[in-house]
View 1 (cartoon, helix red, strand yellow):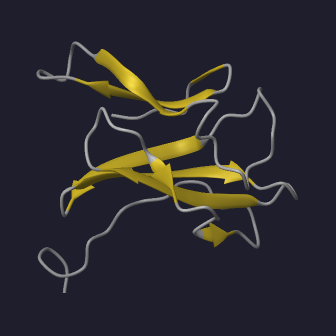
View 2: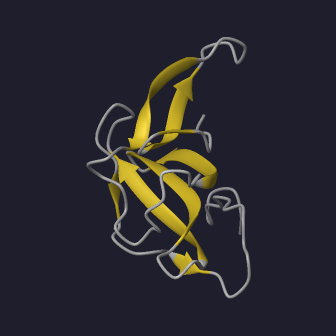
Length: 113
C-alpha cells in the first residue's frame, strides 16, 4: 500500500501487510535524492492519491502532484524491487487541463478486452 503522507522531503510511503490489519513501513518512494525535478519545490506539498502495482517484473507507482507552474499532473516511477530505488520518468505522464486527482491502473488485455 502507498499513501500520500510525507516526512520532510520524503514522499509516498510504502507499507506492507500479510493480514491487512497490521501494517509495516517499508520505505519512501521519493526522498531528497530522487524527488522529481518537474514538481513544485514545496516541503508542505503532498503527492496525492498514489497507487502502486506489480506488473511485468516491476513495481510502478502513479501519483498526482503540481508541476512548477502549479498545474496538477500525474507522475510515474518504477523499481524492480519494493526495497529498491524508484526511478521517475523525468516528466509528467499527463498534465491536467483541469484538476484531475486520482490515477488508476488498468491493464488492457488479460482482464479487459
